[in-house]
Image 1 (cartoon, one colour):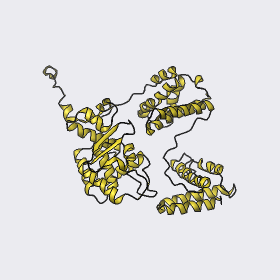
Image 2 (cartoon, helix red, strand yellow):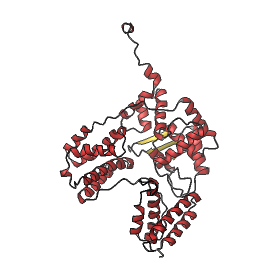
Image 3 (cartoon, one colour):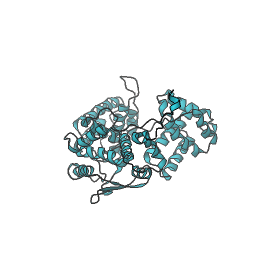
Image 4 (cartoon, helix red, strand yellow):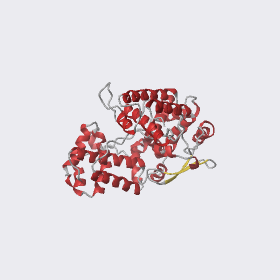
Length: 403
């Protein structure tokens, strides 16, 4: 096999064009291949995985002198593709998940502890997104300990807990996000059995705010639905995804993982096991949603062996990558519908679905079932958006207090 960088770059470009990638995407690959060629010029013409790893690690932008997310993605993606060809003789263009998960612990004890934690989360059936959130903050703490010269958890005292969260704040984390990080961190500390470190978490003093949940106004909701029904600028796929989130309250992860067999066309229902809670849920498909979904599946969906309902609209036609993919779709749909003063994620649409159910006097247990909540307590947060019923609870000001 010819392993020169020039030849490998040519192989990758040919594979991209054969898979139907857009020329703009191919152009980005060509720029990265040029950078790799220049990098390899002083190191010999042959490509090696070690050379590739060194190239991929160059994540500092020479223009700004700072870490570049785009540079990390472009360089890492090219090296992944080239390495797949060197290993197997086939260019693997499967989608690579965003993000890198942060630094990994390196000492033997922490590496083993991290692996045990990942295995424990997997055995308990935690959703992938939950495992990633818990794992990221746990790995961050272990790496923080290593940076402090600690390689054994027995040597970590309560001060390392407060020190770690101070470190997070000093390196870009917002104070408002601290409560979420604490919530994600506590299960790991309980797993380690270090009760003193668990107790030290309380010293951080993070408090979760309970702001009133924003929802779509009736006018904006009507404008969005009408656009999904008739606007030629909104594809059937994007309309179906937006309506699915708005009318059923499905989470982004469940929209991404929805499969063709989950749809019962005769009864116009969707039946699935929710990824976050593992609860089964049966949801009706309102007429417009069923129509737009059928338009996509029958007419616009790319030919693919992948049985996920929603596929990428550009090559390769595989399952949507992650929550960010859904956000890009819904945000574009909002913009085309003329609804531009809100942040159009599936969480926002889920809140709107819950508020509409409440206003229709739907019992809380029913809403909890529709939204797939593991506990009805999770549904109570939506009660603060039911303005009409909240007003009915307001007591009049006593007459004596007016004077």
